[in-house]
Length: 300
Image (cartoon, rainbow, N blue to C red; front, side, top):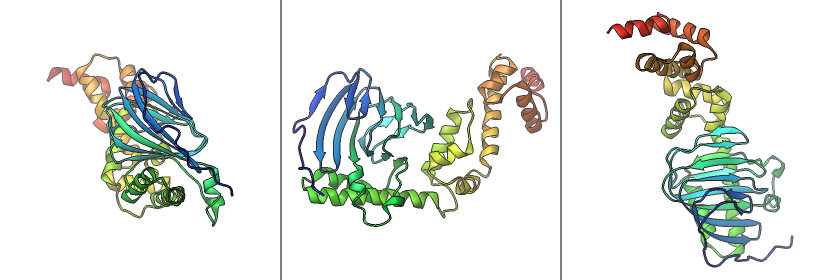
């Protein structure tokens, strides 16, 4: 296969005073934040080094697989979706990595301090060089990866100017990423790692007023549904369904005591489909109806 030459597209950083409608080959910023970018074209893709100053919205729709390596920053209270499904996007970003498959649509809001990251994209031509069973070489989305080997490989990839070494490291990055996906989906650990447990607790709390599906939680954790249910139960001492109901009822108690909201409004705010479903779940758990619970609390 004839290889393209390694080309430095922009030897010097480019300063963008406003990132409104700024498109970096499928990474689209649409906010009045400040950006500094440096782009390198290489044999089988491109590398974008990006510094973002200010709260911003970003949309990723690239036709190549892309790994995002975060060198600094924090997302304090932003949200995100991948192909329309919610994705957890809060916390310290430094040392974490996201993998977005080609043709996926990732949309996110980042709120917090400046973010420094590198986006590395890989073309299908590179995957075609994988010698064995490349028909089974599937890339799935992963978020907040913290693998030290992968992080080091990405760092070396960005530093080197050798086309041969870049190609070798790129194949290593892709292969290791898929290996991590396989290990994650067949996890033999008895409990969820702490960072996953904390992420799930935060995610459930944030979306208590919406429909939360076990399959979505499993996908968010990048674990098969079968293993996820077992790991969740071992970690929380409750099934996912029991835990979600428990958190909804705790929120309902707070609203019943500290607000004058109608029962139907509280039911909907806590993710129940209506007042009757809420009342049934509340009485089953507390022994009294929401109305009676509120009345008794007012007498204390």
